Amino acid sequence: MEQWSTTTIPPARRAPYWMEAVNKAYVQLECAVPSRSTAPFFGAITRRELAAVNLSRITSTTQTVLRTPLQISRASEDIFLLSIQVAGTGQLIQDQKTAHLKPGDLALYDSTRPYQLLFDQDFEQYVLSLPGSILRKRLHHAEDMTACTMSSAQSGTARLLSHMVSELMNSPPSRGDLVDRSLADSLVGILVAALADNLSTLPLKDHTASQRRERIKAYVLENLRDPELCVGKIAQRLGLAASTIHRAWDGEATSLTNWIWSMRLQGAEQDLRRLAHHKRTITEIAYHWGFSSSAHFSRAFRQHFGVPPKEAREAMRALSQPRLMTG
Image (cartoon, helix red, strand yellow):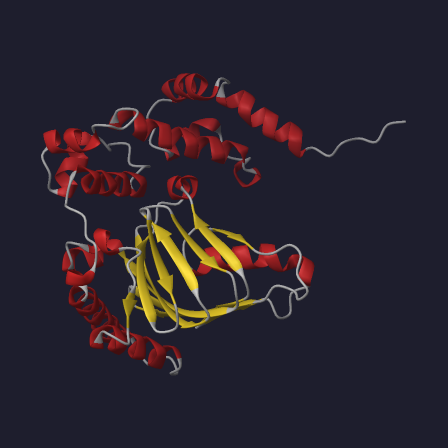
């Protein structure tokens, strides 16, 4: 079990502490909490790992949670999450759909696409998360089922899943990997059953190029640092023809190849500006992000950002130096 709580954190430090806790417990997110309130912000998370499946209980006061395109490009986790509302109300927004959550409601969301979680009052949730690849193998319509409300009051399988998650979160840790794997397999099976049980009531979209495009983006972001990443390899890994990849990408502002290089450049630019990477050479950072030539990286970086990588790093270092008092 892992636990985070703002109880012992000074009120002025609670917001940054909570941001760090949420990022550790789930995926890279932004959290906005009220800056002015009669009572200090409170948040607590308890997290339990069961093989590839993670369970957590989150209790908090008012907040807004965002998963943005920039965060997806920086941290390409491919995770499905299921919120089970226990207390209070909230909203989940993804793919221009909104799931309104009240106690007993469940909703799925996907970390490879932007989403928002809005809570305007105190709330409590259980959250089940698992790798996207596991759910997609078991349920082909998984991407279509995000931000659709399921009610445990109307669905026996959803009620069974909620009960099992609650029992596991309130039980002592198991005694061995075999038990954890068995429990994880059971949870995934019940989750698939609950989603399939509600399939006919959910407003699914057709499996069109837009869905393939999201799969392509998810795979690229997960494998961005692979120097051999190309359309052919993407097609092979996703089980699609290269021509299908190109058709799915039609309508985007740039070609798939250019988008891959753009995402790599953004990652490299962030590393160049991070103090944590100040000892790494520019060439090391370039190779880390899939470039095989420092000269190519330098040209592409300057064309994309308007300055060479060395200048971008020096600007960061100048800003980080303490200013001397004069006069």
